[in-house]
Structure formats: structure tokens, C-alpha cells
Length: 188
Image (cartoon, rainbow, N blue to C red; front, side):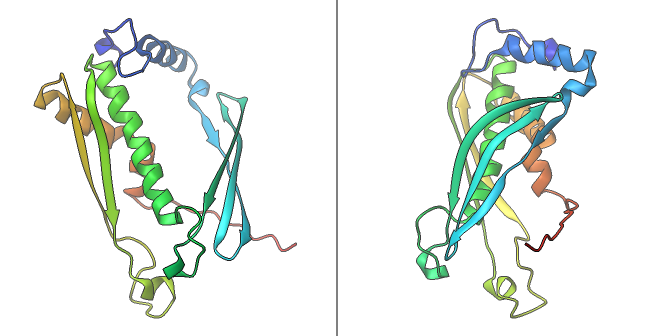
């Protein structure tokens, strides 16, 4: 991957030499590659919740951050319609993660982008969500997405970038296969 890093100036806002430096650090010390993320979500009434992000850990070092993300259901699903719902946030997280991949891969290949957007959709059956029919899953069987990308690359380069993103995007990986969920209940 680093053989292709040709830029010395930011492309698509990505500092390509910084990617090369990060790769070198990780190759020298694989512990630098470990990233741990944590969020805390609290119910705030009706179907609304707020999630707080206070930081993450990279290579064993804590990095402070402070963000708050709200979620709610639309009124038709008994919510207050005050924020995106969890399904929209799930798709948002998927698209945002893949967008980083497309933009970074394009920069690594020296391709300046004019357009980069992803449209994702999925269909849920509320019979599964409401527990009305055990044969109906409560989640998605598939998500369909379309990537629209344009810039000074060739179709072959964009196809290679697309394949690389599907191979390396954490959220694509997470949603494209089962993940072991280790839940623990604490009664307070």
C-alpha cells in the first residue's frame, strides 16, 4: 500500500505522508495498531437516547474527545421525531466509515475527487421488531448501497479503490458478517 503513496501534499484533504508515517510506526510496533472505542448511551425519555463519546484509546494511549449523539424514533414509530433513529445512525456510521476509505484510497493513489457520496437503504419488517412473528427477523437481511465517485481517476482505478474499501472498511466488515455480541446485564 505504501509503494503507491506518491503525494507530498494533501489530496482530498488527506495527508498522505502522515498515512505513510502511521504505517511505518505500526509495522515497527504492532501494538500501535490497536484502537479501542467506547460509547455510553442513556435513555432520556420516550424513545429518545443520547450517546456520549468521551475518548478512545490508540496504541495504549488515551485520546480525549467529547461528542454527544442523539437518537429518537419518528412519530409514526411512537417517538418524538427529534433526531435520527438508530437504523439511520447505523447506516450513517456505515457510510461515514466507507467514505473515509474511498477518500483515503483515492488520495493514496494520487486521485483528486470531485464527488464522493454513498446512498444506503434497507428494509425492516416490524413484525420481527415487535416480536409478532418469530419467523421474521428483527433486523436487516441485506443493505443496498450505491457509491457515486468522480475525479481524475480511471474506471479501473476506481474499481480497485472500491474493492479495497470493501476489503478494509471496519464498518463494512462489521455489517457484512456476524459479530459476537458479549452482553452483560447489571441491575441497579
